[in-house]
Image 1 (cartoon, protein in one colour):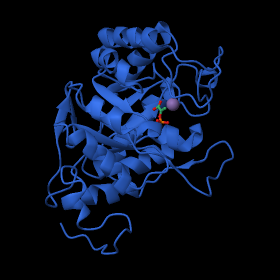
Image 2 (tube, rainbow, N blue to C red):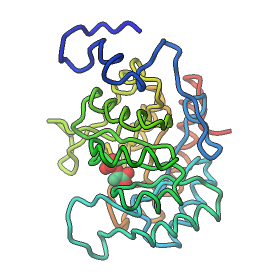
Image 3 (cartoon, rainbow, N blue to C red):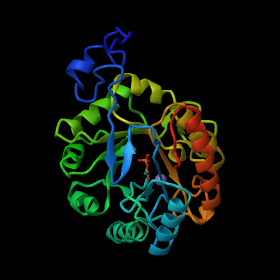
Length: 297
Ligand code: PEP
Ligand code: MN
């Protein structure tokens, strides 16, 4: 594939596709990875939606959310049991539920049949998380935790690799290569906002790099999705950025959905409620169809 950028060291150089990330690199313009995870196809016409709370807070809320996600046509349930929380102090409004949360995710999966994606941060927890998760999520803070990537690659599950919020496309594809080189071909890339000098709101330091969706797809065959919730950190902007992501060719969307967004234990400014999620699914489906994809049906 012809890459115009010839400047050595200016992010991706043509030789990188051969020598630095040959497994992640696109070999021809129509080289696109398509694979199915628990009945959900990635890389094809479907744009899978992974939705759920930031934190698996308790059994009732995750089961209720899973039901709402499924009823609205969502494809997977998300929710953090092991959470990368920015501050070490825990309280009633800031906590992780760890092994107990994994158990509740398993319950929600059993009740609804929705496959589960959840984060893994520690090598020692990979086996436990992989028992419940259909996709193992690597968070933005761990994108370049190479020992973790190598270990996660061997868990026998697809890996969703969030882009580090300061990572270049080259860094991101290098991290994906760490999973691919272990013989695990099922890597999904997720843009979740990058640190930018002008972030429009004081509550967030991230901007959704929508342009990285077509940029990544120029050089890699891997599915590229976005997470408008973490990128915007601001509920009113989630819908426009989700619709824009679908229009930009995203191969999946991660969204935070909560039964009572204002009282979410973590990041209460970003989740949408069940009704808004259902109408967003309809709107995203309309945009998807305008670009030859689909979200529902
Ligand atoms: C999350 O998805 O819950 C999360 C912590 O995301 P990120 O790693 O993008 O901050
Ligand atoms: Mn979150």
